[in-house]
Image 1 (tube, helix red, strand yellow):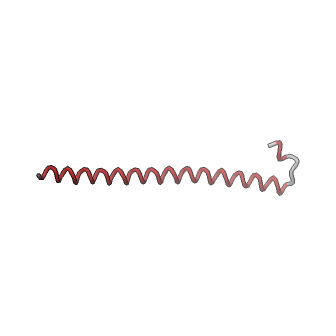
Image 2: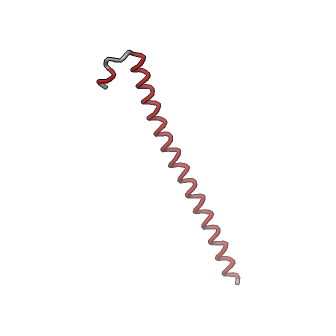
Image 3: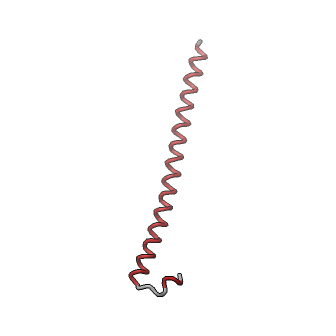
Length: 62
């Protein structure tokens, strides 16, 4: 934080606020991305399972 020593107070506050906001946004993006990815994976797995079961039922009935 030595580079902040000679800056005006408003500049230091702006830099720190921007850093905190960017860090929070990055963490939020990682959380939302992981959550959405997990939901999509589960949905696709369920759809594939349903498709396999339907095809297995068709094959079993013949």
